[in-house]
Length: 269
Image 1 (cartoon, rainbow, N blue to C red):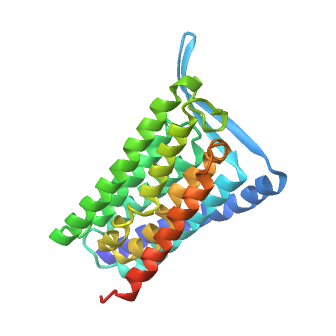
Image 2: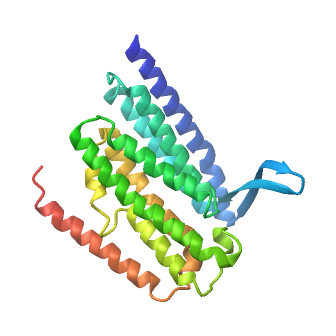
């Protein structure tokens, strides 16, 4: 009875995520083909002349990234139908994966640097909870490495918010070149390096393999690490104005690639 309930829970999540990805696919292709961008302001609270709004951006690259995230996460659920069927805490695993999808989509669809922290911190927290899922000493040590590496990225984003105060807004598309643009770009680049496991912050990704196999194989290795890359895509209009930005990024990426290749040569487990 319990296993059937778990099966139904995973199956509903699988159908839901796969359905969303299939619905968004033609819309994202249309936005890419026509090179369209739509910004929606969702008003949460309005009091007299003041209001609290959350901006949402719909564009081709962002929606296509969301489709990939939803598709991969739906396959995680499909894999978990059998792999996690007899796990005692499988319902918690289901909820954590759904929270991961929600955090990733917040990161994709929110163009404000301040509110974007909701998705960024959500990814770090859910990743930590997934890594310590089995609740043993090895998982806890791996989770601490993961969360501490991601906290560096959070601190860098907070620094970027502080450096961009003179722009009078935190909308990523409206940031212009200023005296502090180099510091903003450097902070964002370091934050992206921590989330994408680039050198010298790459130690958390092998440690994160302590999470359940569906998460290790499909989420951490192919979805979470793209969050840093996507952040750089969002900031590229500002980052490209900084001298040697692309060259430095190329050197870091190549160093990480060679480090991973040489590490694989001596891997024994």
